[in-house]
Image 1 (cartoon, one colour):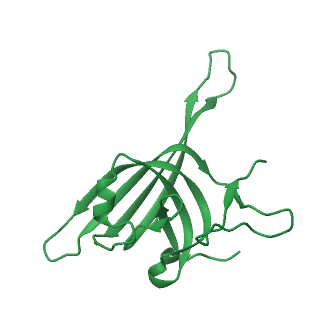
Image 2: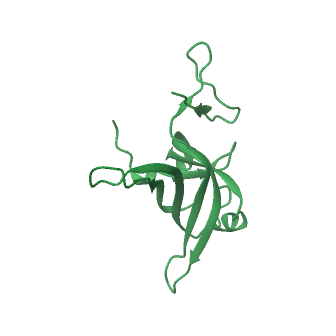
Image 3: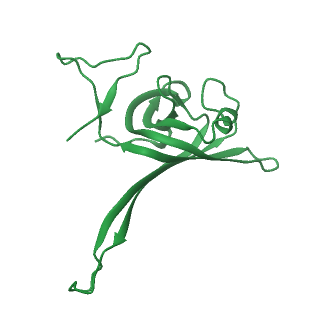
Length: 165
């Protein structure tokens, strides 16, 4: 098992031509299981009995303010607030860590918050929050032909699909 450095784990937005969030400083994924107590007076023991109600997830990215065309820069993100986007947390490499590698997690989310901070004589920063609106695909696998060959799109991306147990 290899360790992944922070600069090589990036958030990519978009379907076919995914692009990273430009000048990212930090990214995080939160997956939360919401439970509801279902204990009754008939239960024995001191422990509460809980049941699963729902799952929720969100992604936060902090980045430097840029106008870096060809990537998801601050201006393009503020114009897309409220829109549903395809989010991928993927390994990255190449120039400016902008070339997408293996996808670890993917799903649809709403770009729910963009906050820009600009302090005097400091680098401007932007915090982006994406709120999951559909299932988060944690088990995705590469698609293969009947022979053991991976399927690749015309623009060079490896095709994947949700894995069913």
